[in-house]
Image (cartoon, rainbow, N blue to C red; front, side, top):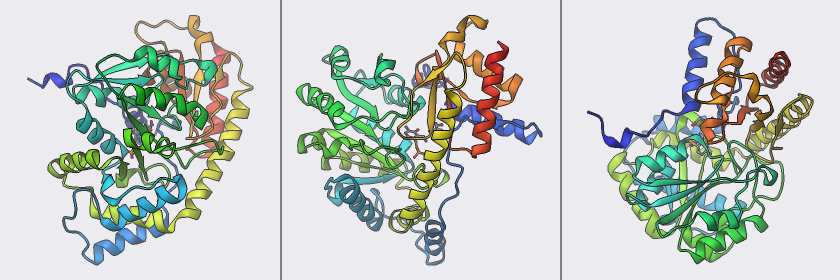
Amino acid sequence: MLSKKLDNITPSYTIEISTKVNELKNQGIDIVNLSIGEPDFFTPVPAKDRAIEAIYENKTKYDAASGLKELRKAIQYKLMKENNINYELDEIVVSSGAKHSITNTLMALIDPGDEVILPKPFWVSYSEMIKMVGGTPIYIETCKENDFKLTSEELKNAISNKTKLLLINNPSNPTGAIYSEKELLPIVNTCLDNDIYILSDEIYERIRYTDSFKSISSLSEDAKRITVTINGLSKSAAMTGWRLGYSASSKEIAKAISTIQGHLVSHPSTISQWAAYGALTLCQDEMKEMVNVYENRRDRAVSLLSKVDNISFINPQGAFYVFIDISALKDKFDYSDSYSVEFCKRFLEEYRVAIVPGIAFGIDDYVRIVYCADINEVEEGIKRLDKFIQSL
Ligand code: PMP
Ligand code: GLU
């Protein structure tokens, strides 16, 4: 009865786990929730004020499919000032969350049968989004020793005459790794040599604890020509529920994205767009403060985790996740399908801590914890992880 498109699509692990946690909490069960990548901060007041003003000033009508001009100007300024990239206004499209910007981009670029290269580990929704638009995800194994960052050699080995796009996430969810300019250049050159577009998801760009981040489009005019940059306000301004993301690309791609969006949703809620305008123009200090807090939590989480026996992890340079290698404990578990799912299931049932199995990101020997939760929760979760591992 249902469309064949859904045959190979699985529900989002991250959303499912966090829904389950909320159900358990509603039953009065106390759970330490280190599963979902959602800031524990609230949206800064100036952003909320702009939304309230928009409501009372009746700025609640239909507007341009690509988004409010004022907001696109604020994004244009941000990209110029912070990332050193000059985009025209008609190269920027605002959508209902980065998820929506990514899906629009895939719809604009991918025909059935086209291959999209996806380095492992990948954020949980990419593979399903690619499949939903009829594309074929081509997974690449990357090396732990290189913090799971893709190299141009690995990329070259995966390219075929059907390759259309490389999807890269920088800083990475789930590892927190950040590519340096030196690491990005050979990857970009390989894409240029092979006529491959790049979708660069930079949603965690502001949440970084090193100066080495470079937006791919800023590397050269050629890099900019083939790259669609994705960003948004969910993480940087704690605006997950407002659903506000954006893409910056060539005019041709932006026009296609805007046409698709115009038919499917018209544009994101104007009220959310005014809130995003407020966040970008008035909330720099609040956003910086959040990053300082994340950095302190990162240091604490890393320090606690390094004392836990039988695990290792990628040292996060950005975002708010730690990707933990649990392969040394594998023989302690009975499981039929997925080791990491069994590990997370037992950890939740026995120690009341919710984390995400690595299989959600394509690597079953790992689990992911977040530190965008209160520091006491993060500490308690890691303490219980230590106890769980010792009990095995
Ligand atoms: N990209 C990555 C890597 C993410 O982790 C997320 C998680 N929310 C998104 C995109 C989607 O963000 P949004 O809330 O803006 O849709
Ligand atoms: N991106 C976040 C995560 O990985 C939020 C949940 C989601 O959108 O998948 O946990």
